[in-house]
Image (cartoon, rainbow, N blue to C red; front, side, top):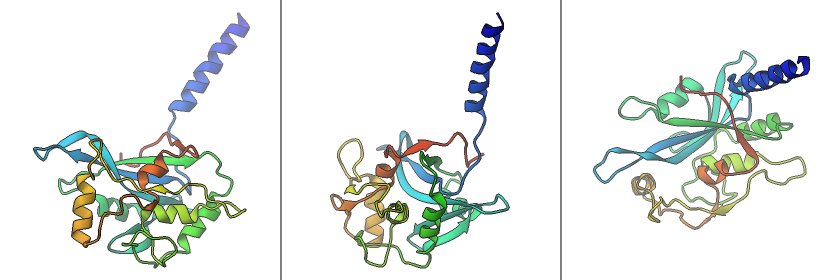
Amino acid sequence: MRKLILAILAVLAAFSCRERPEPFCTGDLVFVALPMRTVSGEDSTKTTLIHVGILDVDQLDSLWIVDVTLKHGVMRDPLDTFFRDFTRSNGKLPEMIVMRLKDTSHVKEYVQNAKSYIGQPYDFDFLPDNGALYCSELVYDSYVKPDGTHIFQEVPIDLTDGSGEIGPYWVRLFERIHYPVPQGKMGTTPESLLESEELRPVNNSLVK
């Protein structure tokens, strides 16, 4: 009976640990997902990943984001500024998915790498090693192992939606900046990073 009770307690303890929110850590990746629009212009239940940033937790446990935006290039901003930049026109925040490397032994170095790019402009050409970066390119270039290999892999950029067409968000974005959609170029996207086997979900929510 004692063994049975201990076994039950162990199961309950494990369940409790899984349910308890995890603290956010330096090096966690924050993915921003917007609802896709229906033909009538309403939000659908499907989402499209539009952005990724890097969490930087300082000594006072305040949360900062290192990321790249069209307006500011590579910056390190407080989480509140990040929220303000991505607040939708209806006043709501988009869905934010937090992921963590399974191997966190070098995350501080990766974040330092990212901060070394602060001040570089946005990469409108979506080309490698051109002195400019887009959001997932910053992650790709920063998360490099001590032996020089990248954590994440480059793939042909795919910005299509489920129908095989370029997603409406990306069409509007590249029309606004007067650049061709980089469909098929080698690179990265928030979607390709999120799908990496190097990452796992974090059991917590940035948006309370």
